[in-house]
Picture 1 (cartoon, one colour):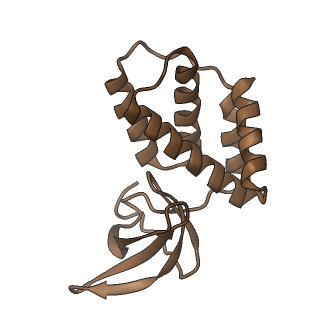
Picture 2: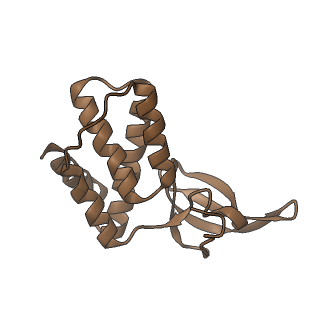
Length: 162
């Protein structure tokens, strides 16, 4: 995303902030001559201030569409061949996918790390990234598709186990 890709967000808009999760725009406020969005992250009940002029460049985005959510969930049953790389390389690659921020990218991280965890226990940092990606996938997909989070978790794991 480029800084010219500044989406307009309104108070009350449901949004996603990569690496943090699903949230809601609570308002706009000015600090030191700069305007910020105040975003409440639902899962952590944390407020984040993001500069209005480059919120999109930081990854803030509107929720995915129902079509995008269904595509992301469907992608979980794809078994990808993973290149041989150590956990640090994998972590960097997956962090970049998370920063990209799309729901499909988040699903790729969940898929990759879930499959890896079936072969060998994930290092702590990768486990945290997996847990975060899974929480975002569950929260955003359930919000978009109007399905409860427990039901969405069942759907996600059913796809992963295929």
